Image 1 (cartoon, rainbow, N blue to C red):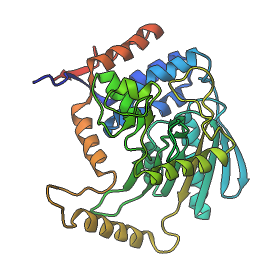
Image 2 (cartoon, rainbow, N blue to C red; image 1 turned 60 degrees about the horizontal axis):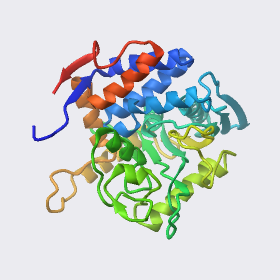
Image 3 (spheres, one colour; image 1 turned 90 degrees about the vertical axis):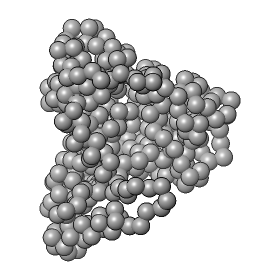
Image 4 (cartoon, rainbow, N blue to C red; image 1 turned 90 degrees about the horizontal axis):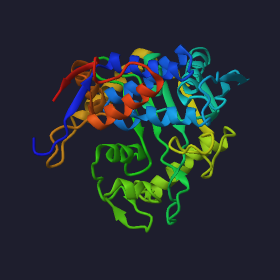
Length: 362
């Protein structure tokens, strides 16, 4: 196959069971373990492997090093009728964010809008899974988070700002799909560099600089003292600052370069999130809103294509197509990723992935 990697394909249900078994063996409640598994496996299904179950070794290492509390139960404080704050208490970011969005949705159902600020949290995986939670409830949403330093402020050379995703969504109408946007303010998400490192692959030369400030295609050099590059220069830098204002400054969590990353075992993450749910039929009927979304979808995907483009996609459409394919065929992993996951299984004395759970090897 000309040096192409060999993939092990794993059924999504088996992947979720594997995640749950590892987390429960590490002291996480079954309910929270299922929430984490939902977010991680949904990322793998959508083709966002940088935020999938390959994150588990770093999460489990943080538990072993005492910088992530597996037993933490997020608490909820009602601030106003439409505003709550969730304290993640240094537990997994997934259940804290899930509780925040669930509460925001309930407030929006009654009062039209719900807002939640989350403090003292951790990495919550792919933002799109929380957007999907709102879409499934028939809601529009905004999902912001801050993250550990990876980007310089525009014109600088030191890591200061997080590669913090900007995500939002809205339900679609008949004959269309939901609008789900989830993007980093950098040229590429930092997790994609970690993925390239795991798989022994090079990265595009415009993704990052090495420690000397030179463009690099080596993921090790990008991660060892290097920095990510913001998309659109000062625009990406400005968006990263926006994420820190809404997620870090507002919540009372770490900010201005103070967030600890998921691969850093020195101290708790202290990540902040900002989530909003909006009732779509505030200004018109739901049928009219969905009809307008259908019109927008078809206008976008049927617009005239530039030379060399075969198809125009709506935000989230490529991921939706990938999900359908992987639900049928399984999630692809390279052997090195399977080995790293099974090393954790051996440590925790739970069943391995990729052996009895293997579907096929291509």
